[in-house]
Length: 356
Image (cartoon, rainbow, N blue to C red; front, top):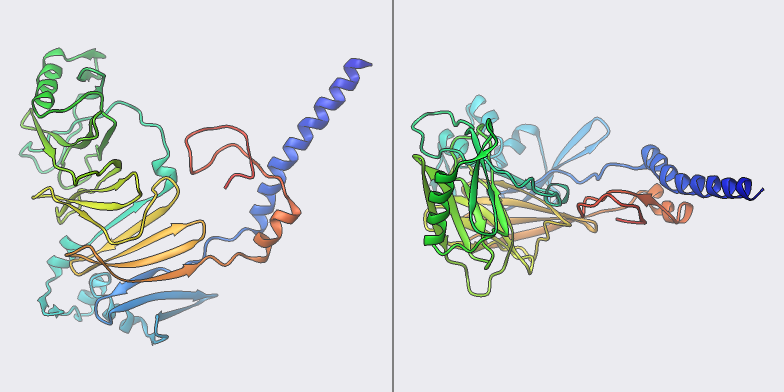
């Protein structure tokens, strides 16, 4: 009898936990909606934000002042974003704000960037390919080895034989040590893919919090120490490698301030937004030679900033509040308990109740 009672209790306990795990998921599947935030851009032409609202099969193009635009008019107030359509229509402007425009400028100077908590809150693999940055070839090639950082140096491992390349490891370790690098590395940030126009290697944060640019040039190590503003404590590094080659990376510090690292001067410029926590907030940037549209998404809603492309200071901002649906308002009362095992805000797989 004792075993039967225990089995019933265990089965009941299991069913309860399955219910608070599965029922909220089924509820969300049927009633949850996608965050309906209109795609918003800052227009240098009208000096204001404009966006497209979708209602059913209709698309309404509107600016913050309430002015409505036809599709062709909307293209014309955002010439750097819709430049392909304007070129096809032979309506691409020859100048904007006194600056001469060419189709090539639009192609090379535009860029986009995106970061999400789910992409940031992951565990690093610990093995990194170091591409040749100056091979003389048009196409980049993946190397036959990878490197890892230890407490005393950098080790290159041949992927075919799974052996350490002792001499290469010594040469690259010595190059880092000569520049004052302190092992091990806190952050190793790069973009090790070959489907890009050029390679700038890695940004390294050493054990003392110092920042370094590290890459391979004609088989030899290139290492440069980067001067940080006084008191800056880097938390995250996002390499860019944009086509315009203006910036090496975006950075955030422990106080959630955001910066851009210039390519040629290695100057670190603050970006004029109040804060950005990459572990809990998403951000997208649509940039052109005049301004950036920076969209910051939090659990409370979406804020869009217009950033001057030269000074990186905020020109204007607006907010899209997140208005919950009736189903989302009702969910805490219908299902006060919700069991999940993963979250976009951390790296762990573990049971958690009512997690965000």
